[in-house]
Length: 88
Image (cartoon, rainbow, N blue to C red; front, side, top):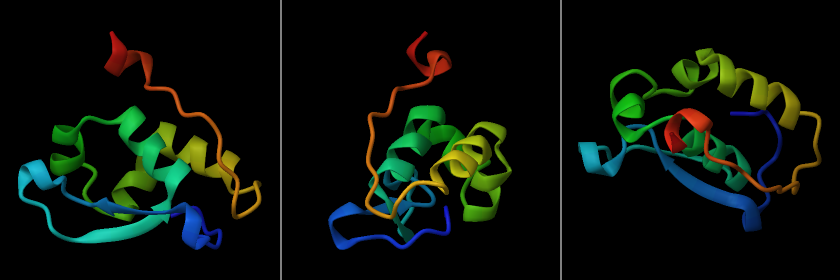
């Protein structure tokens, strides 16, 4: 998703449609990218509107995150915070 190589230690399988919504297809993402997706979007939003890499990249907050993380080394990992919208 971010265009960086994914070290084996940082690989997470992201269900494009969450399993809770019947999804089976996965994409391998960096752990930080995967966590950021779930920090920004609910499972219902993922299932209905953001069920492809292209759709995820069209989301403004995901696109901003990807633009930022793209400049980091392949093995970079940092803390991820749930969006205020999802916390509130």
